[in-house]
Image (cartoon, rainbow, N blue to C red; front, side, top):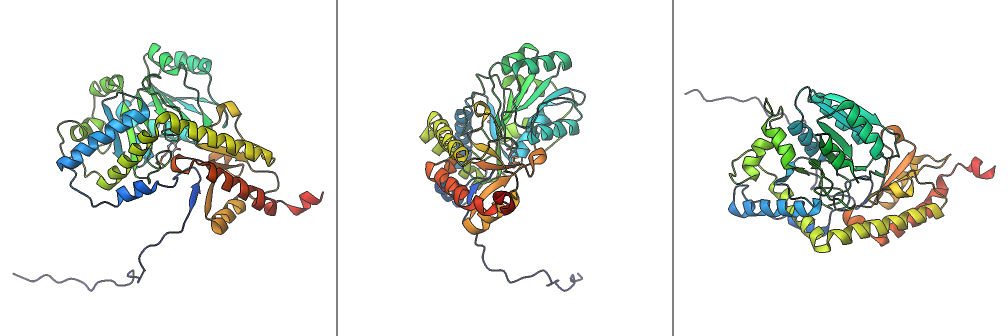
Length: 393
Ligand SMILES: *Cc1c(COP(=O)(O)O)cnc(C)c1O
């Protein structure tokens, strides 16, 4: 047999890097938030096989804890292997058939993304829009449901781009009255803001690991009701996305435990610990903590003369949008906070780019000490960024 010959190994990309180190950061942006130390500890445990009986048991625990966090009894509740956007796409992929009318409520960046995704799955996309910083009224939603007769209505509960929390009362009942599935983005609300998926008649929802759950990014909790399951079971064609097809995933997460893809086992160790900590604190306590710390932040910022972008009754406790005052370079200020103080504050997204800062107080990061830290920095550092000619005038 002829021995194989290989070309010489290209050494040009081989660099002598040292082992990784990371800077110390307090993450007060739109996510990720800092991870809980016990979650980091769980992540560093040695991986085990994803079909190991121990792991299979752990999967059920994660599902049960997710049902608690979301207040749902949905059988199909599981973390998608991927970030929040993967779970977001999974809700669309599994509920939309080509030609279905999907109504999307857009009052920020993530509503637009939902519309884009639904379009890619060849839905007939209809939208209702509201300015970035406002919420939808029940009347506006009802009028659109009557006008478009959608089979899915997609809505963002916590718009991370604007800091608005959408009031949910009555929306699910309306959707069911008009025989329409309700799809809800709960990425920035899970763990930090009251959520009652079953009482609110939500049919499909998704979230992420790295915001209110204090876990690194990498998993996207997903859930669907039996109504949404019926639509999935009666669809004519296959779900046009193999990786996110819940009917296939169900064979792994359900009782069959058939291999689909190799689960990121360590991420699931991490989210189990994150969800366990949430359950230990109790949902009511966590929601109350997020609200109390957010109110302390809002009051403090207003005392410094800053204007908040959203009316107090619609404000999201997990994310606050602050208007950048006239004459201040918003980007230079956040860069200063990051480089000189190790603190991350977010800038505006989409239509609010350059207009607001976004301050996240999510999960492990929502503490009064952190609020004091942020307020002290805004007080001492922001004046350095004021346009001097302005002050002199
Ligand atoms: C962060 C976010 C997403 C996307 O989640 P990723 O983990 O970044 O993929 C979706 N919707 C909202 C409202 C978000 O804040």
